[in-house]
Image (cartoon, rainbow, N blue to C red; front, top):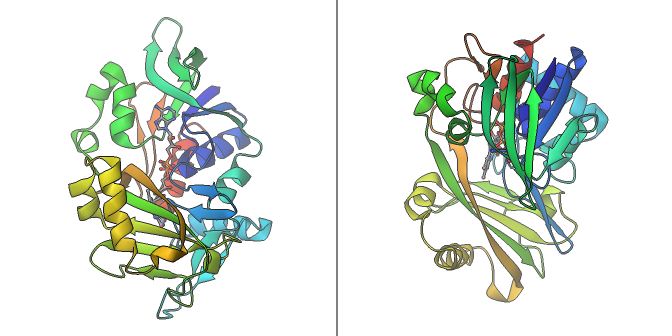
Length: 316
Ligand SMILES: Cc1cc2nc3c(=O)[nH]c(=O)nc-3n(C[C@H](O)[C@H](O)[C@H](O)COP(=O)(O)OP(=O)(O)OC[C@H]3O[C@@H](n4cnc5c(N)ncnc54)[C@H](O)[C@@H]3O)c2cc1C
């Protein structure tokens, strides 16, 4: 079959890889300018900063076998076994940034970036999906596929499905996501926060702060600050310059203003699903359509990975 996968995040890329291995023709479409989705790395000058997922843990055999491949291929490595107190559980990271894992997974995949899918409709007469999309330069892009896997966060997925959205189970339709506000800061000199370079829930405002240089991602001093979910949600709709000032002010708890070169705000509207569906993915009962992503098998990278693998198995 010719199968279109919407989303080049971890779930979409693993789904695409497994579909290819099963002999399908696969095309991946993503609105972003790079692969990885919420596994995101940004370069600012000489600094390299992870600004979505910061690390991952491994609990299941299915994910362990993927991660072992990434470790062997040198695209992931163990970061630490506890950010402050060592608890013995490995935390892993992408080598040179989290997107290295996505780039590795995407290497043999027909991936089209900068393509925002706006609508998918099933053409009953021809038994195929019609995909309407728009390129970065506002060109209309139309594709057809025999089957679809959609891995966008669920509220975004629902807007693409047209009448099919009404056929989703009710508990899928109301999965909500917490946003995350994020500040990316480049520095004149490195700031010590902990031996590992990170602090989890260091205070009431931030949920995670990370020295990307100590982590080993960046050759230049830089810090990532994530705001905890309730404060992110309460303030999300404020103007960007208000948010920038608010986060900057809080970051000064850890930084001296003289050390700061640049500070950038990043807003993740759909950072983390508040609850997840009971199954690893959702397959439409009579159309060749599967929904997957971290809203299905746990709100983290491991859940996204397992969901993508499960989605591909529907067509194998
Ligand atoms: C700030 C933050 C911190 C996090 N920290 C951690 C952490 O430390 N550890 C951990 O395990 N997890 C963490 N997570 C969660 C983790 O990043 C996600 O669970 C995982 O990456 C989700 O992968 P996914 O493939 O399901 O979705 P995504 O990565 O969101 O991929 C979906 C893709 O779909 C694309 N898309 C959406 N709509 C369209 C459209 N209409 N057309 C085309 N493309 C579209 C998007 O561009 C995106 O690339 C964090 C997330 C955030 C945001």
